[in-house]
Length: 180
Ligand code: FES
Image (cartoon, rainbow, N blue to C red):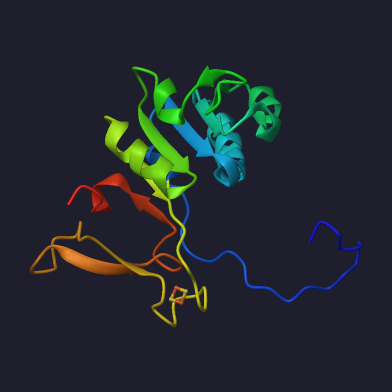
C-alpha cells in the first residue's frame, strides 16, 4: 500500500470488529505495545490524551534499530518508556520489566508471548487486542473462533466461543482462558 499512487482505487472492507473501550480507562491508563502492535496504540493514546488522561506508554522492541513511534507518543505528552530485549536502548528486557506500580487500567497489543506475559504480570483489569488466522474477516467462516469465559453468565459451563474478527479483536482480561 505504501507504493500506491494517489488516486488509486481500492476495494476493501474496513471498520470490522470491536475496538478498545475508552470508558474503562480511568485517570491513568497504561498502554503496552510490542513491535507491530505499537501503531494501534497510537490512535488510542491520541483519544485518551484528548480526554486529558495521564497516559503512560511502554514500547517493547528487540533492539534499538527497530524502535519507532517513541517521539510520536512523546509529542502527545505521554510518559514513554522503551524496552529492548538486547538492552541497546532504554530498559533491558520486555515491556513487563518496566511495569509501573500504579495505573488505572491497561490496553495492550503485540506478539502472543508478550500478551501472555502482560496477562500474568498486570494487577488491574485491561484489554488485549488479539490476532488469529482469518478466512473471511467478517464473521462468516468461524475460522477465527476461540474459547473465552462467558461474562454474561448465560452459558451453563461458563464457556463460549467468540470470533476474533467479529466479537474481537479486543478482549477483556477477565474473558481470557490463558491460566486455565
Ligand atoms: S475470519 Fe471468518 S469468522 Fe472470523
